[in-house]
Each structure stands twice: as C-alpha cells, then as structure tokens.
Image 1: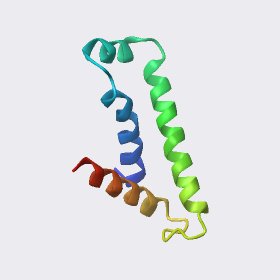
Image 2: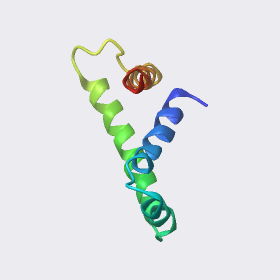
Image 3: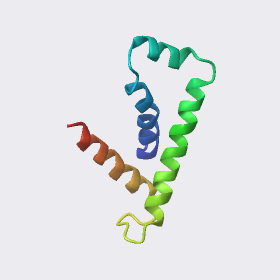
Length: 81
C-alpha cells in the first residue's frame, strides 16, 4: 500500500474515532449512505491537502505526492504520541 492510500485510509477512520459512544458508532455504520459519505469526505480531504501542499511556493516536496503523503502521515503519527 502506498503512502497516499494509507493517508486516505487514515482519513476515513477519523470520524469513527470522534464518535461519542457505541450507539453513535453503530448508527454511523448502519445508516444508509453514511459510510459512503465518510469515504467521499476523506478522499476529498486527502486530495485537497495534497493539492495545497503541491501549490505552496515553499513546499520542500514539489510535485511528489508520495513525499507529501509521507510527511502528513509522519506529522499525524507525531501528534498521536
């Protein structure tokens, strides 16, 4: 799995981590269309973050989407600790 796919997978997990409890978690996965909405929002977020990083004039990553995804994943991992 490449870094962009890992970032997309992580972005899809974030709403699950923010649920208030078991009932909310069950509702999120059993409500028709909710998982598709979460996936769509996650993919849009990842694409937008990469687009912004690519267009930043001082970005050390240039157009390398894998390097950008790797840097974002590393930053997120650092926040978990």
